[in-house]
Image (cartoon, rainbow, N blue to C red; front, side):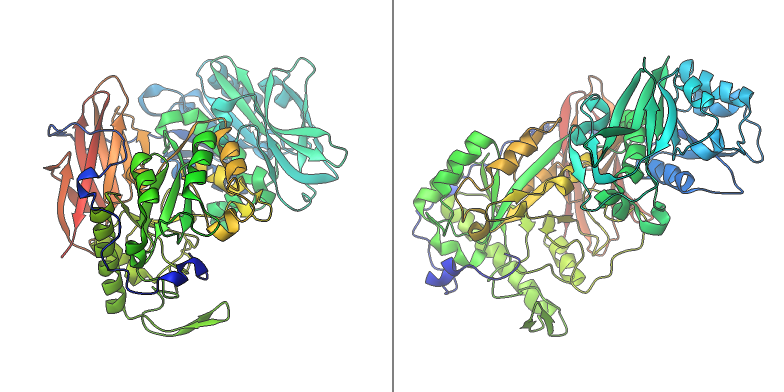
Length: 625
């Protein structure tokens, strides 16, 4: 519970440490199923070789544009290297369109002003070279920030008549619809309409398509008459393709940050088309996740039937019909209240129910400032010294272990803070006690300042505070009746983040136990399959991967425990990377239970593993004093 406390706990305000009325089921512990790592020790691999440049930007150094900045930054976000060619000082030659090992660059970007503007820096011969690089060399060309230009013949030639012009739009409604024509490009965004909540400003342009067009429309916007206008299309040309983007820009990621541009749906067309083109053109060479995960967490309930508006028996039926998973953020203090009826449900259905730790005593803002009292939302909270917070963490863990021994129900070592997230120093304690992560509504620890880095908040977990993974969750929308707002969750999924929903029983189920069904149905109807899992499963399988130019695979992990799958039909070298400041000593690093060599350099823990074909491995980092 992140605000307030349910009255359903009023029946037991004691310590909760008395012996549970539930019979001891410690010999019946049921673990959630997942990939089973091979027990054999794995061999150490070699270090990753030098990466090659992947994308090419054609720009004008005398007038660097927003697109120029965004193109290379988006490439960097996806783990790619960007080469820049200054058209003001360099004559474009065929050799310059080739990257490492002689192949054409997979993606070439150019601002429309440099291609079509009155003072174009590209000659007819140079444009022919670009066209040949697409048709013959297999490059993808993205032309962005189109406006009304007198020279539309170049546009028509590059797209073979697919796009023949551009015109300015008026009276727009502020919505953006991602088409369903190419789900291999648009992925989780496929077929969704994103509403900005405000009228789109002037300066948005639409593409005029040829009558016999071969253009695949990827993004449209709608005017007040209800007519859809294409603003982002793709035209196949021989071995490659041309992306044409007429959507508007309002700044670049160094002025506004990638996070603010990406999640601001009033600016939806400003950065998403470029991300779609980059992700598709470079494929597995980009940082990506092969899996989509989702979870519903309900804060506070004891395992009693019913708990307020929550009937565990009835909710199980809804989960089975509508396919979702519910994690209970369990207050350790109430370990003695668990009833046989609910315990048996958890034991029989670990694919539907799971537990995580929700503070310890749930006595207000339990993990507040370590040094000073403060007021939040009109309530005054006393300081909680760090030693007291550590005692609460330790006692909470002991209570969760005791509850597991008494009932047989395992719990995931994930902390959800009551009332609000803790200060950064408390996160270091969670790392010390080997928690997997913390999941909260706030992305910043208490008293922390949001980092200014351009890519902050765009990865699966934040590691900026205490070098401990923090994940962000959200309520599913507004209530009574529930009105889902799935836009941020779908945007999360496109980035490889899990869609993490949370609520309280008196909000989500007040109108009926079916309160979450509509949300689950919409998530399950996305173009890509979403797996509903426990928080522990999600975090232990949460990583980004990219295929390197030497055929190896780099893995970006966050927590202290990770299960990685090699789904290739041949063995591969895997290079595991984890941000590591050594603010808590590392006691051991194991792979499949065996000690494994690693090194920490420049704030990154790294290990290289030779991984057999079609296998999994479990990496565990043990922290402590």
